[in-house]
Length: 372
Image (tube, rainbow, N blue to C red; front, side):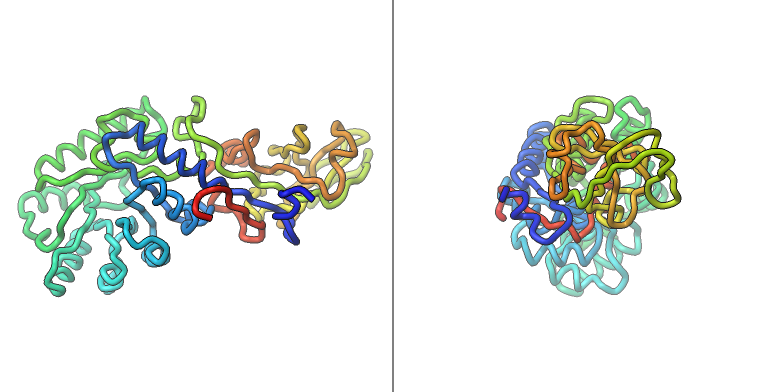
């Protein structure tokens, strides 16, 4: 029995996650963005790959600043990691300031009300509390708008009790190095920070690290690039592959015209063919939108998806693959070096981020390297 078959067990699919590759990607980003500190974004359960094992691996590699989206994500991560700072990007929830401080979590303060609540909580505790203050520079999503930034610059006393402070912003078009929005945001952020109390700054996401040193600031916040997503679209991916998703072939069959395949009879067979049905579907993270557009790899051969992807199954054309290689029990590669998340995302009209964060929990999971 192969190691893959043993790890697969009773499941229909196996997701292999290379923690050493994730740690290696962090080191690459640290080198690229240095001397700025390189943080790590672990929101959405570590982009679907497991915030706990990924966090431990990155901490062992040297990461000391972690970012999550929600308070509950921060609380869960704190049970795994005692030492590093953990920043909750979605901000301070009303009436829950004590939950953040009790778990040593740092809110990203996104509006004057959050600043007032966090500063008031610090005064009530009789101790200073750290905070990231988010200055919107053009994303128009979260963060202090320009009028609030001006008011804060004119009277920074509302920050009393918040220490240390980090000023942060978020780039809207960092994956497009030639987009003038990048420089416009950087200039707006610099002007805002120049009028505020001096403190470290955090600007760059994954792609922002590749825009140059002026975007690095004091702390970078890579997310997707850690997990193998290409931060430089249109150019070779500088990051290592991290995930491999394999699934069992359940059945093969011969078909001929005028037969159709799958729901809605959406695919009509054009001639004699051999099909394989594989135990993976959109419930496992293979988007339905990739129907008729995506492909899998079987024993080094590419097999196109035929018919509609269903919840639990996909069907692929294996006419050109030797029967002994595409037989029931064999494994088909859904994600891997030849089929990275970016490529599957493209075939479904989406992005690799969505592919990773949609990976279902029915797959058996195997971690390589790291602390697991």
